[in-house]
Image 1 (tube, rainbow, N blue to C red):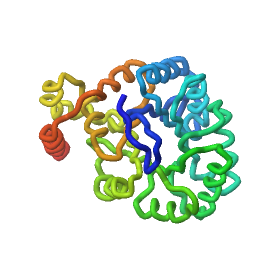
Image 2: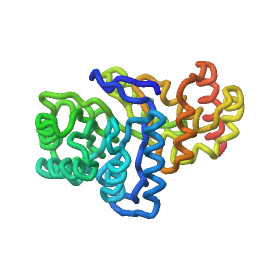
Image 3: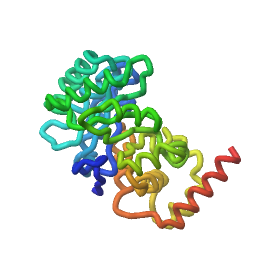
Length: 278
């Protein structure tokens, strides 16, 4: 496995982790029908070195966290989870964190993230609670998710003792909006960008012809090429979904090799042309 530093900390995390959106259900909707397969996938990922799992209290109404807790028993894993925006008031942040700790069956959460911005709750109130959680040893690092540059700046200003170490946003070869401002800001400020939906929720497979030449050259699949493109970016790590064991096996193939610069440029250019045609 390859690693990158988390923000400005000394912590190093795998460049390829496992996302858990749709594991254990939908947004605040619990579904236990695929629990065994999900746990197998997570355990396989850990075995292959993907010891970075991202989840959230809202995934499956907390069930995703329960499944992660089941999968990581007695394992050394970097755990990231998220508090929902409707829980951004001081006491609610504390309660949400404590509930996540119980579901995950851990004493400490490595990275606790604000899932989406909430303009209805002062960011100062939310961050005061986050700092208390760090002080109490319930979380190690503070992160955000889906925050703009301006929102990241305000969030950092609201912290008196700690730094924001990460921003989790959608980023893939098909969705490159963050390259305009969020990614450059994160790179400049040494904030880790955690890329979710790195395969554009499967939409990227519509453009398989754009990948044919590069995939053939490296002997890799479309998913492996797309993930390798992402993790080459400075300050970027990716968290593809860990729903099925076969996906985990394929995803790990994105590690241990590197796209050449000319192939990166050609891939981006060809894909842009394909997107314009559709």
